[in-house]
Structure formats: C-alpha cells, structure tokens
Image 1: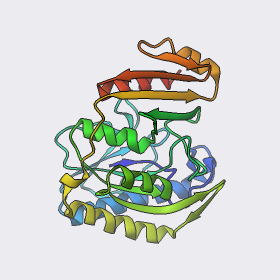
Image 2: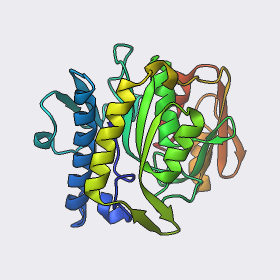
Image 3: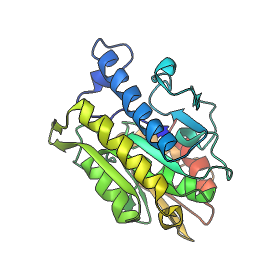
Length: 263
C-alpha cells in the first residue's frame, strides 16, 4: 500500500501537507485514518500481512500506533528508483494506493503535481503521467496487480480509464483552487468497503500492461533545470523547458526520472 496526502479528503492547501505548518497535524491524522481503513478492509478480505509505504514528503507522516498490528510501515527514502513503491517485489498479491492526487498538467486538484512542484508535466507516450501511472507501471513491472485507489475524482477517473477493474473511491473533487470533500468518516467507511471488495474480486482483472516502447517527456517550469537534465545519458533537450528520452525498459524510466527530477 502506497499512501500520499494530497488526495486525502479535506486537504486543499499546501500548508495542510507540510510537517512544519500548524494545519498539518489534522490532515496527518486523516491520512493515517484512511490508510488504516484500507488495512481493515484488506484484513476483512483475508490478508495476513500488509506493507505500507509512507509516500509523502519526508515519508514520516503516518502515525504507526494507529495502524493495525498486521502492518509493516516503510518510512523515509532510500533513493531507490521505486520511490513511492519501495520494497515492492513479485511476492505481493496486490497493490493499493491511498490519498492519491491528479497529475501535473491537469486541473482536478488544487495541489495537482507529479513528484515535484517544479514541473509543468511528465508524459509517457503522450499521456500525462500521474504518480498513480508511474507507480502502477512499477507494480506491473513486478507483475503485481493494482486493485484499489482512493483520492480525488480526477485521478480515480484516470485509474478506471487505465483499467476498469480497479476499484476507485473518490473522496474529493477539485474545482480551480477549491475542493469539495466528503465527510472524513464517510471516506473511512468507503475506503474500507472498497478495499474489501477489491481483494474479494478477480485480481487478474486488475493487471496493467506496460507499453513495449516508452517515450518520456518532462517539461520544467525553469529552463535552467531542463538544460541541466539534458546532460543525463540518453536525455535530449526538445525546447528550452522540455527534455525527452526513449527506452524499452520501464526500470530505465524510473532510474532516469529519479536523477533528472532532483536536479
């Protein structure tokens, strides 16, 4: 389970996602509550062990004592290209994403972004790449089906478009710089029910296929960052703000992004 915060119900402003801000604590607790609800749904469906990657910011947001005892919590960042899916391997039966949000280049969440706020967008084969898409392909790379997502309606619609078998629970909608949110308790109930339903369904229907050939385009807000990124092996400058690269190996997508997005 990969857990982010910008798609948690109620979260509307960057201050609510920032550990140093007074508004953060309330939404950290809701992030934890939504993750815990997903765990309860998984346990009700028969799961025996759940690994959770805290995947926002410092990766030190979820409150460990409020998670079920059957969980293992992954905190911090190792620098591995799997990033928000750290520790995933072929032994897992399913992957889930909680609190996910719309991508850079879209307008369905005031906090829409992909990985970093310094980008106008990432595209893979001309499709805007959300963190959901990047991480769903990571799961596919390890042959793990993605069965569930919760977050804003925009990213839930995208997930269903990629694979209609995925159970998606929208807990909010973005309109310009505002959000329309369901009640925190209702989001908890719907996430728990949705995860239980997803795990009791046909997991094979939720497998995602990675394209055989991958063209990745990254557009930076600052031209200097694009210029720097173009020095990475295989990366070409397309215009002052945009770089691209091609590969047939999805791990190379992750490895390249892990370097050129930190410039």
